[in-house]
Image: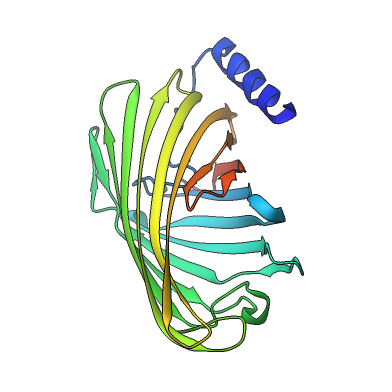
Length: 263
């Protein structure tokens, strides 16, 4: 109830704010938008998602343009708490990402991403897979009109010799997809609806591969605070995992975007 009241307060506050500054971009929650950082502008992104059975996931992402808006490097550092009775928490598998701005105009943007997965998480505690891997994602963003924007993702992950908590290994591949619609009530206050799904493989006790299919619906809001030095974006959502049906969660988002040196 307290969280719902906070969302309502944010909604009402957003309606009362005049949109005079830069609009929100590249600040989706579970669906990746296809906008690279502008030259001289970096972004720090913090997320936290409460799941069922006491589990939660947090992450920090740092996005940096390289030379121009066409090339962007970023790193994603996850930190999680597992749902098992022991409730282990710790660092997960870190991603180093490169994204190329293949297309960007007033209507559409396309920015394919290639990531290297580093085995930094503790597999014995269920916090990582103990294997180096590759991940690819294709985000496409389309501006329908001045108030509606949509984003679509298709992704694939490959993990050679991925371990389970008891050390058995098997090669895992996973596919993912996502889509979202964003309604710009103003340039600084947006309503969002995302849908993400995956077919994720994992190593079983007999060194074979099991697959779990998931589908999550994620309604939320985001609000931007624009200053002379930075844009701060705050967001909140209520993810609903419909498949396999684990129920409701809570998602919180904070982004700080600012210039460094000459833009």
